[in-house]
Length: 295
Image (cartoon, rainbow, N blue to C red; front, top):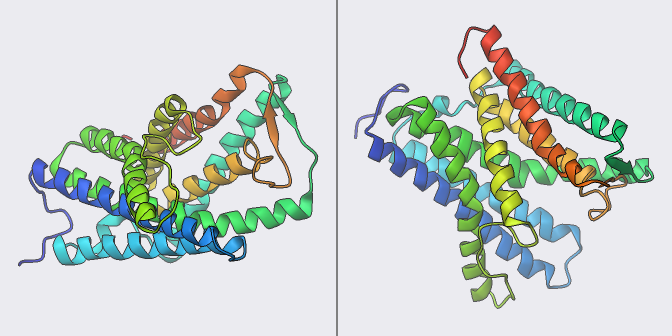
């Protein structure tokens, strides 16, 4: 089989087939890792072990399967996935962190000024510990594997056979429904392991399906805007990690014992998460425009 060139085009059915295969990789990795982590959590292991095991297993499965698809099945180089190196990787990752963190700070500050949020007492040592542990697990379990799969493999596959707007829409849809696929895998593997697992569903257990259906497409668009603006996957990894950190240390801070928390006091405050994602998307679009690109 002849090695394809980085810019080689494929038919749209082939592009969609590759994108679906990549989505299945993420669903399988998350589902298996989640079921195994739940089984370990039900034993006598230390509390940190199930989370660490889930993250490492998901990372290993997702990355190895995507590399196999890219190099062995598609016969394409890794360059099209946006994995910049060295200074470029650090610079683009930092850009994703700064823009997302700045957007979140602006929206959270405005909501606090308007009286929409109240803040709990700050426990600085606990918060710092939480931020370090959360960053390590979030990068391994979610931020890097999901970006490699969706903004790397899936988006690149679709871009080879479809117009850009089609590639963006389909990538966002597959990203949104990947959780439903992983819940099916989780249920099947967990049942085989003898665990009491939740039935498959569109949204993760405990989350509002309507809110999930609104937030995840917005999140997916923001991540693609970051990826397209710089051409580097590390920008979307930085955005992804910062989003998870902000939400878990503020809105979910009390339930996660993060050492700090924000409590919405009016219904409008629930819009703050999609709002700072929209603001970050707008900033990336502005940067792209200033560079003479269309996002």
